[in-house]
Length: 119
Image 1: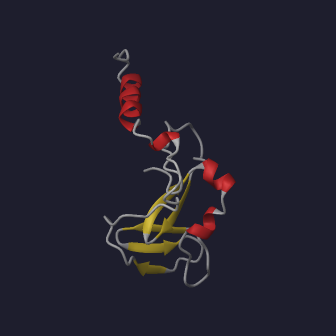
Image 2: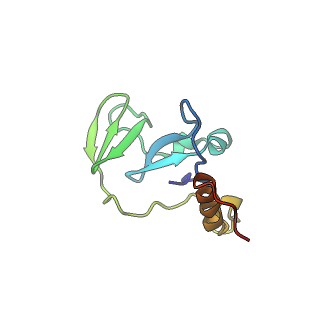
Image 3: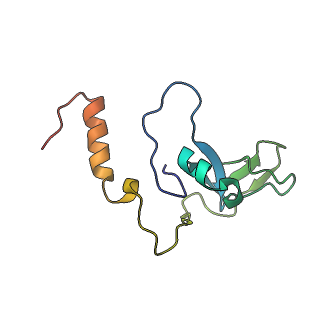
């Protein structure tokens, strides 16, 4: 799953806690990359708990649950619905979203399967 703000994709994880943050936006689980965490007020873009106001929400099995107070409610959106980007129509796509995803996937498969790159 890419970052909901910039579209960056997670790389192979390292040991320890992930620097990526999770949240809920429009009743869908989203990820926030470390770059967007530093550059934006990312919590303002997320849904907040109706009881305590926290943005520490998790969406699973059609429910949204607050990790701070435990309040649970039904998600308004079916799990397959789209989440709109916050990018403006005139914004250019970041390098991670410029159509090179297939190249990144092929390179990752080559690394994992210990194959030599083609081409």
